[in-house]
Length: 225
Image (cartoon, rainbow, N blue to C red; front, top):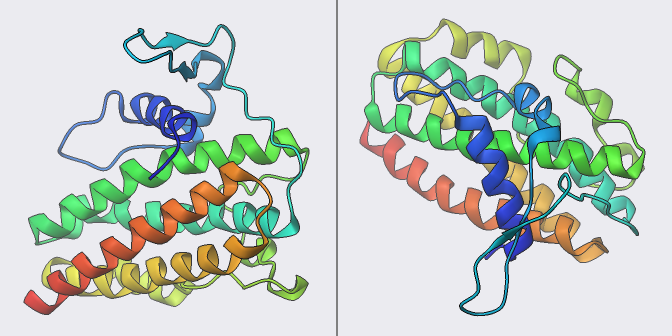
């Protein structure tokens, strides 16, 4: 379960990222969400029974005392999430299954706000933020004693997914996303013991539990194709 501060921050980011979206397409843009940070405010829970207030300034994302495990996880998870959004964006025009289309929309709605949040954390730490279009390998911390960026589709696999349509797309999407999610779960699980920041640890736990549950649903859906 997320803490109230992380849940509130992601809820605000989600409301901004999903504004203007319709059920007909997967259109959340993490880069667009990042451009609206000056308008975001963090909810401040009050005492029991008291109304929820709004912070007077922009969301505070200052995070002192990161371990290298925290940095490695966040820097790798930004491009990792971005590929999941690229995969999800293909579904409206290619998926035959409404369940696959709904899954793609849920992935987009969950991971785009997390990209925004992680980018804010990295900026607050004064370290480089992975940008759209970067080669994910540039951000792989496997050479530094941490788990590598697991589960990514290769350029050839992404090209095959782009070419596929109908049931073939559904199958490739589910197979690829199961592996993609499994890689994220591994990265989160391996980072938890060395994490020193409560908010990064909380996100690791959310990724591990949330994506493990989606893997189970995807495996069931894949078996039904």
